[in-house]
Image (cartoon, rainbow, N blue to C red):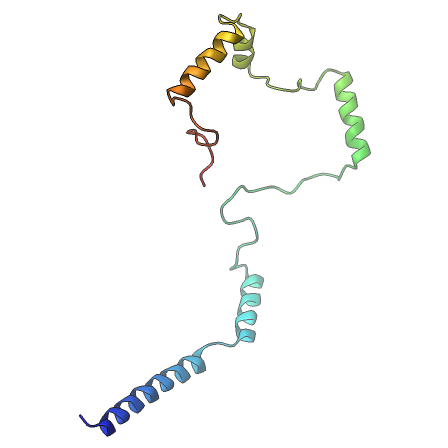
Length: 134
């Protein structure tokens, strides 16, 4: 092939690519068109409201709004009436375990933990089965 035919072939390829690019841009909607379509979809209800897709669904509070002073007063009244749950764990199983007498001293527990650490039996912090995924 001569250099003239190579130049003609390259020019033909470049022209076809430029034509395809111009066609793609001509058929693409403008930013204003996309915004208008989005507004129309929002008004017609085709686009879900924030929080409707996935995640917990929250209900808007019903009734009259209560200011902070009224909430604090209601909490104090409930505390005086004994209607508030105690702070901390109220799980009966946890409380039953705590109520049991200990069978080992603190020194024995510390020695056990040191021995498990030397054998590499302890799980590093943050790497247990119920740790959050990365």
